[in-house]
Length: 158
Ligand code: ZN
Image (cartoon, rainbow, N blue to C red; front, side, top):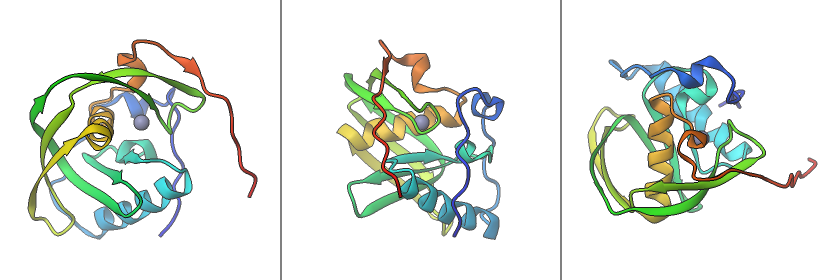
């Protein structure tokens, strides 16, 4: 596994629609492994493949400490409700803001074994998944945020 560089919001790849994954090969599984490592290293709760420069429809999302969902070609089938919550983004460091999202979603996708999966999510996980799926369409949370604030830098030296 390797930590990959996370692109910043002025990078054009972040603004492009990503491509469907046609075949799950070793490149895709290695990418998923690297994305897990990269997200953990950056203390993030979600990561889209184009954030590390790979313009493919792949995302990961953390549900608490233990579970990390890996979704290939995710597609939102159901979205219900609306709530506003604070978001930030590893590609937009130093900013956070309130973003309206659906409260409950159902996402269809394929996992790394190539099996179809369906994930029902509410609350924070639903928010993370919507944020990451937006990335795959070239959309950043700053496009949808009702307001934006500077985040105080809390940097740990290690
Ligand atoms: Zn993001």
